[in-house]
Length: 353
Image 1 (tube, rainbow, N blue to C red):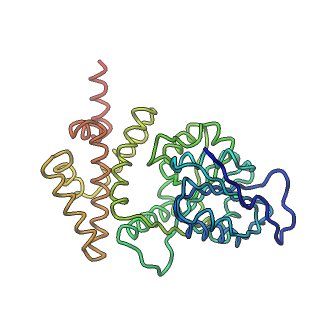
Image 2: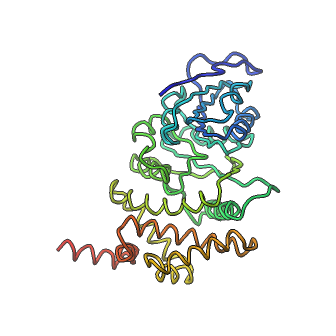
Image 3: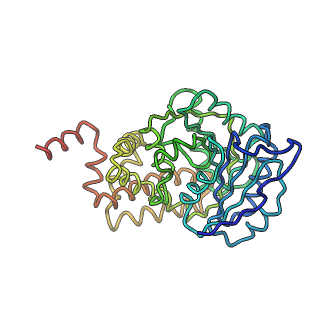
């Protein structure tokens, strides 16, 4: 692992920076997104939070574009450090950022997030006097900017989630921890071992469960906004729910995190009748399953916005269940696992007798 450091100390209107600890360390892992990471860093320069009280630590995960040159050319009113590592994935980069941070409070920002001016002030205020907090902020859609159907669907789902948080319908928890916008005290992150580098998806949720076991609680702040501009292709989006399904099974099997399966069971029972009917009919069926998936993909790629958004919901749920099915070892195990809790408990007791 090699390290490159640039712009270690900068001077601005805030005067000379503190030589010891900062109140916040903003950690940004990045890979080949030089334009968006520069946008994030410029947004940090417009914060209402004093630039003398925070630092930004950017970790390039083996970027091969102009990230080194573009970040190195930035002059900021806050302390900016740039570190390079060979490509090892975002979890390794986030853990490195935590080790290199000088603050006791870490704010994680993805490289496609643009923090609004009040972003850091809201994170800092929430943690004041609350040492056991994990704060989650919204990843909000940009206004009046074109986006693909699948990205628009993601934003729609997040808006629904945030509205339910604000109304008190849902309580934020570890399954809502998204790495693009959250903050936690550094000693807690280190105590639980940081991000699990074996996970390439759901690594943030997996961390959330371990933080919850560590005794931390979760809160959502609708004002700690990060404008989110994801750039993933349809193929990347399509792979994501499949990996989520696999990783939830792995969390339960290898980490003993039964809540991951309990949530999967609950969410399946809450799905509409058509989704549940299609899932039971096609998941794990070698002829029918691919045909249904192909039809859904065509609807997303070539349908109008309304049809495409409905197809995204269906595909996401089916792909998640497909991932669970493959990781569990077949459709019989899938439906036994997703059976209502009373039936699942009865089966477990009979097997244990």
